[in-house]
Amino acid sequence: PAKQRGQNHQPLSLHLGRGTRTNIYAGTLSCREEEEDGGNVQYSTREMRVVLKILDSAHRDISLPFFETASMMRQVCHKHIVLLHGVCVRNLENIMVEEVVEFGALDLFMHRKSEHLSTAWKFLVAKQLASALSYLEDKNLVHGNVCTKNILLARQGLDGDSGPFIKLSDPGVPITVLSREERVERIPWIAPECMDDTKNLSIATDKWGFGTTLWSVCYNGELPLKDRSLAEKERFYEAHCKMTPPVCCKELAELMQQCMNYNPPERPFFRAIMRDINRLQEQSECHTHVSTCQAI
Ligand code: ATP
Ligand code: MG
Image (cartoon, rainbow, N blue to C red; front, side, top):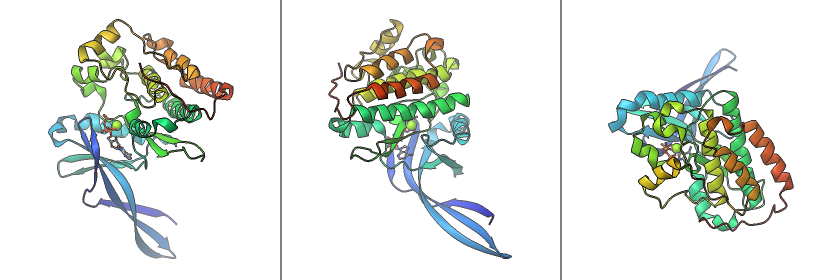
């Protein structure tokens, strides 16, 4: 039977964290379902746990770019990308309503579980992220903020079950609205070509972000260049410096370097990246080996 859905929100609840110009809350979405049964219309209400990403009211001037992100996410349907249920405006608040991803951000998870992350686990995370980004590449959609804090874990995959299951979160407010200082803070996640001109944002940008993410995954969630000042970060890009390749995952290190190429057109296609990961995964003899990389 045909179903129609009306939706309304209950009061906000648990604060999950802060993002760039946003606050994130756990909430409940009530969906009113209308069902026709032999001429009679029946109503029922289904409740769903959701995440509410609310743009700070002080930043209402960037509502349009915020909703552009939502519009990009509405075009997407992939098992490794967070589902956007929709958007709403409540009083003066602009809100994205998204599916809950149970185990939260990948960076924090990797810090907590660093001793339990095997090479096989890391390969799976890399493979799933590459498949999400390959899907976006095929649809000619740019994410623009690929980093470990924007990857969420739906399944931990540490206890001999079928491995981790990730979901790439939305990119948040686009980098076009960030100040130069905010962009410098994002070095080395943000691609070098976007530092001086955010119009250079392209699918190649996501390849750089994927490379940085691989580095961080290999180093158990370590934040790249975390002790560097903003001036040092800027010099890092100006001098075309490279990240120290991880020794524990040599196979992924090579791929990471190809993605973090200062010349965007030379970065590989995500389809080729996926092929490489599959091949490397088969070759990798250390499926159960626990990595012991130390970030330098
Ligand atoms: P940014 O643009 O900097 O990514 P953001 O608004 O997307 O900002 P995040 O920093 O990515 O915010 O998210 C803040 C925190 O909210 C995350 O660390 C995570 O714990 C939580 N979170 C975000 N989205 C979800 C989700 N769909 N399910 C569960 N937790 C989430
Ligand atoms: Mg985010």
